[in-house]
Length: 130
Image 1 (cartoon, rainbow, N blue to C red):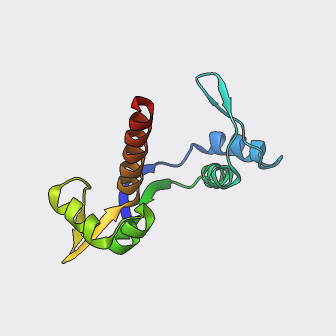
Image 2: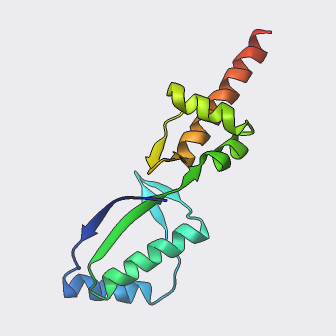
Image 3: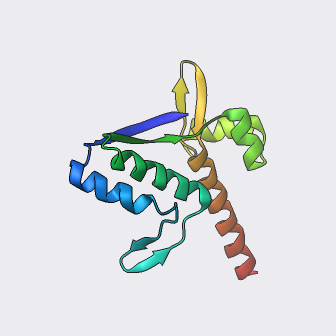
């Protein structure tokens, strides 16, 4: 896994932290509005948001970071349903981005998923033309 640059946010002022703490005391139901549209969070996302807000309500500074899953070439090939050799050749040609950890190749899960999406779109176009 690769750590993506964290972002640090300072603690809330005590008055704001207290208001947030009182608001969270009623439960863990969180409603998210983005541009006036309500979005229902998955339980995992809701728990993460509640945890973040709870930390702010206690007056803590918070650091948020992301972890992106890195796959071995064998894992990536299995996920894509192709041979390990074919995948290695694709990385050599630059068709799928690869990162090296020493001499070992690592491929981002997102890169394999994007490649699979491209393959599906290509198959759909061929089916429409036939």
